[in-house]
Length: 239
Image (cartoon, rainbow, N blue to C red; front, side):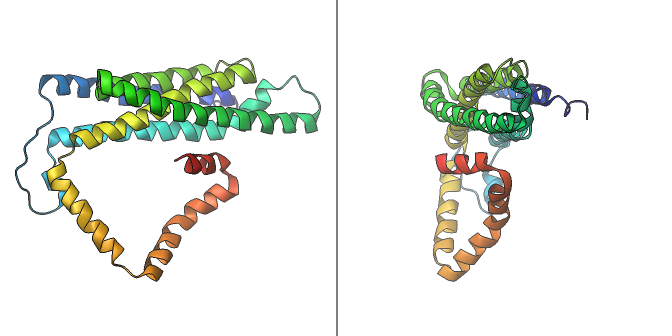
């Protein structure tokens, strides 16, 4: 309750949790450097997950933790943004003007964050090809952890938006590098045929079944987006 009373302080919680993902990436980098992934192409029968060894699962879990804390960062931002903007604009005494400026600068901070996300994906995607996926993932996780925490110390809407841009660089970079790392490590010889099999099975279903299935699965998410998450609508459009 005391943290929620200080909305910008809520953003300082995220870096502490991000440390778990960062430690995992450090272990991943050490394991990758010493042994590397198992490149065995022996045939496996049964469910796809039986073809994964311990290293594959470790890479998948570490990448998933990075994505989880990316999304946690976004959720905290959505929760803290209105009150944080009001706090940073507290010098405005007129209630109507304060509400208008809060909305305006909140939208600007969100747009800047999305721009940082896209830019980070491009920059760190290329950097991962040069210095390695695990090392680049560590950089991006530390980057969005640091600048999310610094958002709590903002003194104006401008440095708040600047920190959100730098956070977006790390978030976009981590998503891009994480996907590349998982795709690079997973045993394609075992997983791709199964993926094609599922895709063919899905394509053979009647169109009406596909439409209604999609509606059932996406309706709760669409309702959340329409009710109060324009930020995620922008993310969906960007993706």
